[in-house]
Image (tube, rainbow, N blue to C red; front, side):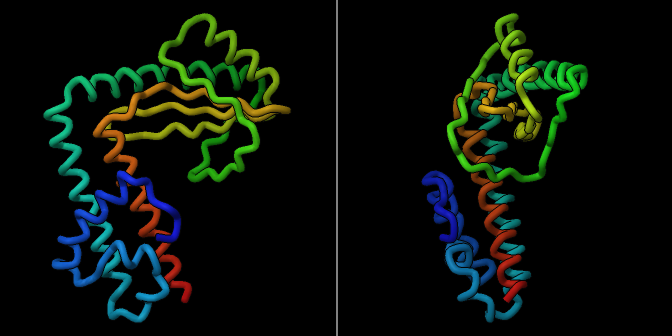
Length: 199
């Protein structure tokens, strides 16, 4: 495939691809791996869009089943979402006061050149003091918080002479893995579609 897929996503895609082949007469796995090779297939744009939507619908069904069977996991996600809201609110207010801009880009592509990551699971005085220090030494903040169904997982990059990232700790669970796979495949379907249109 163009970009290497996460192993979990790859296995999900392969298992759902069997139904996609029957329904749409294309292999989503093969099209994503080499969009140019499928550009001449009749109605490939429509078939690719339909295959992507079908994949998402199957993931949505799996998420609904996981929610019913995984109350503890879902409660943990909601707790992480609440922490994200609290930290986000504090960073926004403090950044405004210190005149540090916050960017909320649609997509982010950063070269990893030595950022320090801090994973947090509670908001206390030490974290507030740490955020205040980071804001004072930052040129800007990038808010790359990821939103899911009814919760968010916070992530903020404080860019200065050295970059620091604060992320809300959220242990991976079946729901977040499925949602990440859904987003990853949606991105790849869009890239493949754009590539085919550009040929």
